[in-house]
Length: 145
Image (cartoon, rainbow, N blue to C red; front, side, top):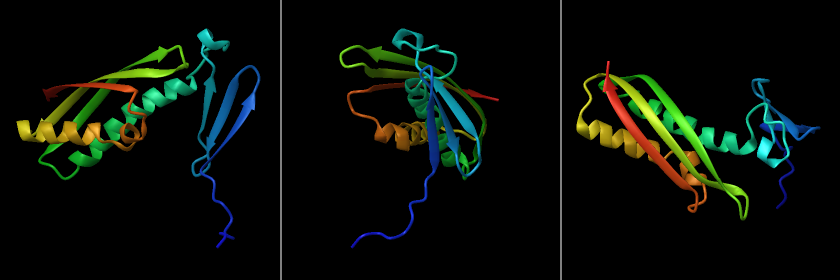
């Protein structure tokens, strides 16, 4: 039975020379731009599509940590992520994403809380959506504030 409902799009993307895209988040109107990287014929003046893939993993991890901690006896005062993307050549793809997370915690935070928070972070939707051949290297440094 065909669906006669009109499709509701979330985003629109347009291509423009040289090797640049503009993508609009339709609900908010926010626009992000990508460039091909300099090592792949581009200008490299902003994020590349694979940069967005890598940063999507980091921001998803941080968001899930925030959601997980909302009902806890501790609070996430700040999370800072340093992100490194490693490319492979044949075929050209992201081979690894390394993320070092510096997590500042206030309140009562136990070793069990830390284990559960890290487990939730590693199970974020982006992490679960990436191909298993892509190495996801996450490390967490916790500090109390």
